[in-house]
Length: 239
Image 1 (cartoon, rainbow, N blue to C red):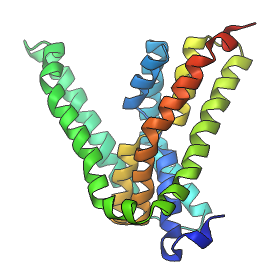
Image 2: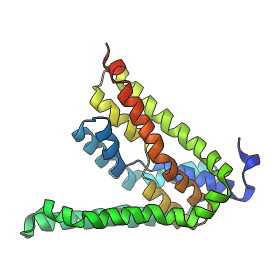
Image 3: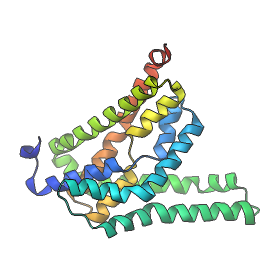
């Protein structure tokens, strides 16, 4: 639909970036969205754990399949390296540290988490700032392209969230489950998406730009979904 407004050499890269972004289910930010809509915390935690498991085993096949359908050839070994480096290795390191602290150390786990909290936040902010730094010129010089890339992301977020929300109401699920369910189904693990796009292509590629636009759109759009969920509580609970 937008091919006449986009540079022909980058269209495939934009599609690849959007596929990578949509195939990565959200983890960390889900806790924020769930808190804002008074979601059930144990359900949210379970869904996040499930999303992590899905990404370890299904992210590579899903991305490979969807990009294969669009005619793009992506090296599977590079996708596997991305999953290993950005999810599996950090997971194993943190679980090993947790096991060691709980079973073989006098350090309190909560105290340890508080001590590393600042470093975690700093790393997350650096992760957000660096992609914008590399893509800043393109974002400022090509606002129309950024807008066109944002359109399918907006469709995905609102369609997935409202579909999940409506299905929860249809089967009679509680509101505190429906809220986080809708938000989890719509948000993306943009850190993984950006890192994978950069690994497969490069910092200044169209794929990296598409994932960075996802970061740009994610927070305000998800806050609007939170607003919709909160505003419709009476409607949802009405029998």
